[in-house]
Image 1 (cartoon, one colour):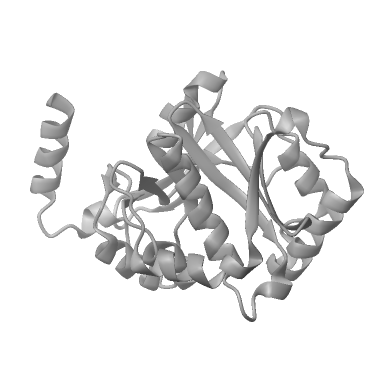
Image 2: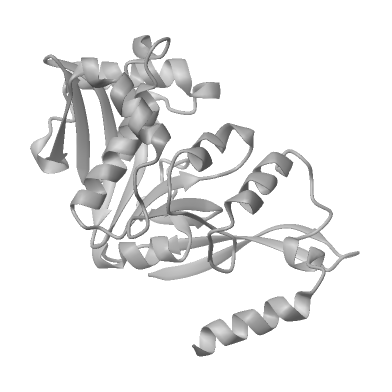
Amino acid sequence: MKIFFSESNNDYTTYTFNYAVYCLKEQASEIPAIYQQGFLPYSSNINLQTETYYLARSLRVNLNTFEDTSENRRIDRKLTTLNISLQVIPKVAFDLSDNNFQQFCMGYAAERFSNNAMNLPRFQYIIGRESFNYVFQFETNGKIIGYIFTILEGNMLHYWYAFFDTSYLDDMPIGKWMMWRTIKWAKEKELDYVYLGTCYGNSALYKTRDFKGLAFFDGKQWNTDIKLLKEWCKADSELMPFDRFKQEPEPNQVLEGLLQAQSA
């Protein structure tokens, strides 16, 4: 893998010089290490030919400490009547060009993605990514109810994009159930981590409520302080005067902690 920095905004009055951080994947075996360092796949620029990842506040489930909560069990009971089946299909064995499949996903995208964020060219770019290698297909009584695009490599799975039949939402939390079922599948397969994407703003708080074993990448490490994560999410709409390190009340303790962690 190769990591590079792209200069962004600067504020000389506080000596704050921002850089976006990117990672280039050179081979598939690097994927677990790329995610471990807080990177996620970048798909906004569909003209990029090399798989590129961006550093962000991402969220993952440690499957060694994951177990069902009462809320997980409640949702599972609620959907029992649908008798949903799950098929985990390698991408190479799945017909990505099928018109019904593409219409299903694009119909969901038109309804649930704002500002045309998931148009057909971007959708086709995403399904063409090499790292995307498994489709989780959910059916009820022979009818497709949802798909999840995943990246499965080594000891980890990335729950990347989900598409589902929104007609069930009035009565059934189908999206929550699909996320839980995917995590459950990964636990059953003895993987170590499931990555759930970014966690910014109030709209992402649903990811923080339902699962045990959560941690978020805070720029230094995987942090299990979910109360702090919720505070950060709620404050994301406010512009910070400078970066979080400069806001630390005891910055020397932060530096000492990092040095100790590196020498351990």
